[in-house]
Length: 473
View 1: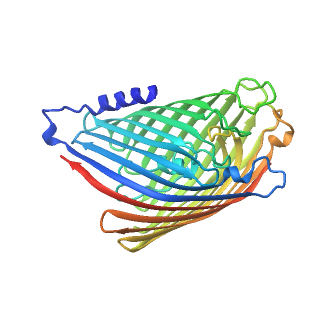
View 2: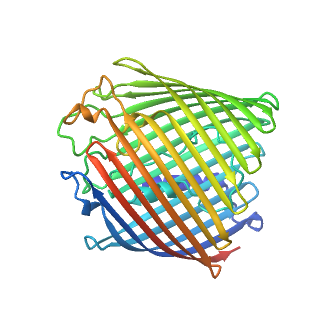
View 3: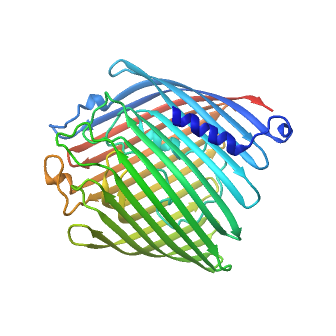
C-alpha cells in the first residue's frame, strides 16, 4: 500500500484544492452504492488428462459490495475517487474472501493549453474478466460522446489485459499513470507520460504459467497540423518489464526481464469533410534477457481510409505489408489488415470489426510473446425504453504463437509454437426502476482451445444495485 499512498499524495497535489478561498466555486458530491448478486461459473476441461481440476475453476458465489464514489470539480481541476470492497462466499469449497477495487483520477489545467493528469487503479481478487472491465470504465459513468474515427483496431495506449485462461487465480494489480499534454497550435500537441504497473499473485496460488512483474513505461508524443487537410502524429515508447521466476519452473532459467521499444509515425489527409486517408509506419521490438527466448522486431506499414457515410454510419478500412525480423532464424513476411463499421440507430448501436496482424503480448500474466493474431468482434445494443437496455456481443480470436530459433524451457518444443483459439458470445440485460435501483443479468459462453488448455465455460452474473446521493455541497 506504500505505492498507493504516494500516488494519492501526487493526485492531491495536482488538483491544487484550496480549502477556503475557492470552496464556493467547487462542486462536490459523494454517492453511495450497494450491490448484491450471484456469480456462477462452470468450466469443463475436454482433455481427460487436464492438469487442473475443473472444480477449482468453478464458482457459485453470492456476494455483497458497498461502493463509495467522490467527485470534486472546479473550472480548472478535477478529482475523482471510487472504492468498493466485495465480500464473496464460494459454495463450491465453502470458502470466503474480500476483494478490493479502487480508482483515482486527478486532472489539473495549468492554463487553457496545458493539462496534467494522474491516475491510479488497484484491484485485488481472482476474476480477470471483471478486472479488465473495471479498468475500462470511468469512475463516474457519463453519457456516451461521439466516437472518434476508427483508424486502428486498438487504442494505442490501452491498458494491458490479463488473460482469463488461467482461471480463478487470486492476485493484486496496481497501475499508476502520470501524463501531461501541451497544445501549442490548433490540433497540435506535445506530450509525455509515465506508467508503472505491478502484478502479484498470491503465494498460495499455483499454476503452470502465471508470472509476477513490475512494468515501467515512458511515453513521448508529438502531433502537428499543417492545415485543414494535413496532420502528422508521432509517438515513442520504452517499456521495461521485470519478472519473478515462475514458481512452477523445474529448470533454472535465466533472467526473465525484457525491454520493449515502440515507435509510430502517422500522416492523416482529409480529402473531403467525410473522408480521411492515412498512412502509418510502426516499429515494435522486444529484447529478452532470457537467452532461451528469441528477440524480434515487428515492422508494419499501413494505408487506410476512414469514411463517414452519414452522422450515423462510419467505416474504416486499412492494411499493408508487415515484416518480422528475428535475432535467430529467418525473417518472416506477412501483412496487417483492419475493417471496422459503426452504425447508430435511434435506439440502437451496431459495431463490428475484424483485424489481422503481428503483435506482442508480454504482460498478459502468461508472457505470451509474439503472435499472429486474427480478431473479430460484433456488438449490438438496443434500448427498448429509457429503463431497459440489452447488449449482445460475440467474438473470435486466433493466435498463432511463433518463436523460431528459441529453446523450449519446459518439456517440449511445442511450448514455443502452438495455436490458441477462443470463441465467445454474451448477452447483458439491464433494467432501472424507482430511480435508484438497477437489476442486471449477464451470460457469457466461451470455448477455448490451445496446447494443454482445451475447455468450454459458462458464466452467469446477476446483480441488484441501489445508488444514493449521500452528500452534495
